[in-house]
Image (cartoon, rainbow, N blue to C red):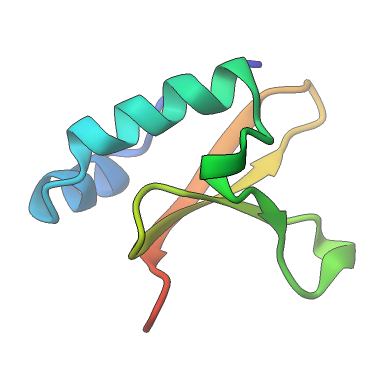
Length: 82
């Protein structure tokens, strides 16, 4: 499982919210097993768009898509409760 490098915007967001270390840990878990229980990986509504998320921590989630080449692109990281 290959996760593409994050955009500068997302890297800045992780740094601003002190999530960089936690994100890297979760990313390693995801690459080993995308459905590891602590990640709470899920498909988002509407399901036909095929947009997924996994938990970075209790508050933040990484939003991602599977690309046609099989790579994973993280398109956003956001506060799950806003």
